[in-house]
Image 1 (cartoon, helix red, strand yellow):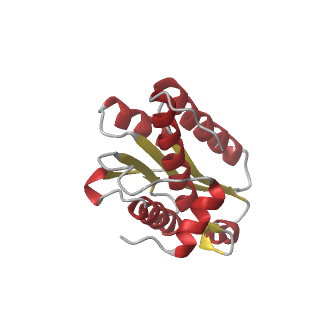
Image 2 (spheres, rainbow, N blue to C red):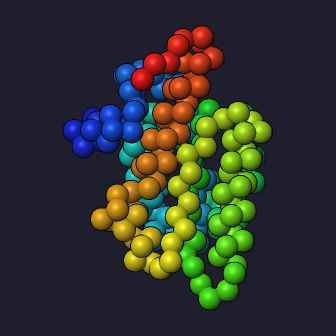
Length: 174
C-alpha cells in the first residue's frame, strides 16, 4: 500500500523514519476490544492502515478481539508467549459512566499494558481511549482529533525500530 503525503508528514512529526523494507518480516499483534465495537473498529482501521503504510503485509498482522479493555493485557501477554509478535497494539474504548468502574478499568488496563511491555521488553502501542462521552471517543477514532489507533500503531513502529537500532549497537541521534 502506498503511503499518503499526510501519513508521511504525520510520521515525520512523530519522529518515525522508517525506510522501505525496515519492517519486512516484523510481526504485529493487535488486541482490540469488542465493547464499543463501532468506535474500536475505526481505531483498528487506522492501526492497520498505518502498519500497511509502513510496509507490513497482512500476513504479518494478527488481530485478536477480546470482550473489553480489562481483557486486553492478558491477550497481549498471550501473543508474546506464543512468539507470534515483534510489537503489539492495544485498542479499546472506555467511556465514563456514573460509577467508579471507569477509573478502575482505565487504570488497570493501562497498567496491564505497560506491565506487559516492560516485563517482555516488547513495544506496546497504547490506543485505549478513555473519554467522558461517546462524542469524545468518536472524535479520537478518525474524527476531528485524529485516529488514536493509527497513532498507537505508529508508536509501536517507532519503538520497534528504535529498539532494533539500540540492540544493533547503533547510536541513535535525533
